[in-house]
Image (cartoon, rainbow, N blue to C red; front, side, top):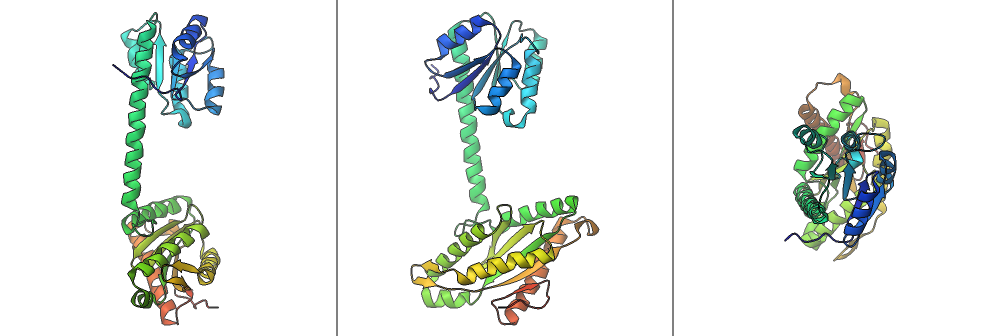
Length: 320
């Protein structure tokens, strides 16, 4: 026996016949929240302002054919996954095939017994709940597979994957793209003096600080050890210095709370920019490797020149 769905499930019934409105209200109200409308225009208005877990659509609507309305609903991205139960007056083979082409989840023919309707709704909603649960589980696994266990920013593999996509976007939009490589100054000394757990506290706090300081669409990843890579879409060489300076000063002034007490750190940064993506080779992997190599070389210059600074494309180091 199929269990009934919880009351929190909201249904939208689209029908111009009063008997169907009455039937759905009478036989579904104990287990569902039911809204009824008489035409497609009213239905689209409600769909825009409310969330539903299932929509019941009658075949013969006054202003548009029910199947055509189903197709229009499917064409709206926000409603593309909304399950639809189609109520047909004729279940010919052509209607069935057309309904499934329009993204209908199930069909029922009038006249029908109320228990059949309840059963079909329950099965659809149970299936939908299982799909959503599976999607959440997949998304959770994907997120964990992409994240660094300690800092929760992207790991090296995910960072590279997203970087390749951003390079492709930059080439299509002909916008600049900047890669920053950041390294904690004297991190080995922190490790040696305070231990691995305190060093981990510093890494975790630094990652949180970068997430807070940078834009939501900037991509942050742990490249290895105490080294991080930051990808800045839509960012020119000139603007990269502004971003780097802001982040650099935020890190220098921040008090890092650790299990060994409050620590202060500095960082060195190397910056490389893809300024004219259209003029470069259409090979994202080579472009990314070159960006990383240039940023790494700039980082090396920053450290050679005394640390606690950033270098843009191997130019003069910027210091306080």
